[in-house]
Image (cartoon, rainbow, N blue to C red; front, side, top):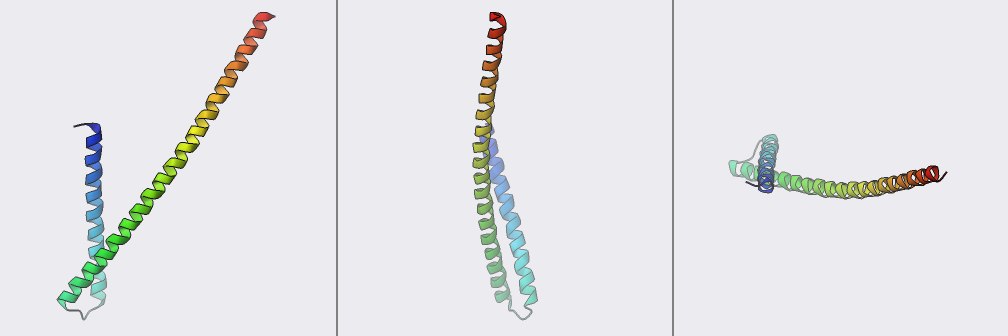
Length: 110
């Protein structure tokens, strides 16, 4: 199995685990809300629990998307700064080498 395929597989498993956890949390939240409303029929309770679970999953998905967008934005920002820093470092290195070469030439010429 290639490293890329293995990474994709791990990411898919992580996604399934996140989704399963979020569903469980949504279901638990739905059960808590339904428990607070004591006079519900079983069908009303089930419907309310499903509704809260769905709302919870929607909020979680939106949060994950925002987090992913922010991570991408930060990655681009980091890449831009890293590129600028690397360019500056190379420029200083070239300038230092040129100064060292000029100094060596002056010493040899004297």
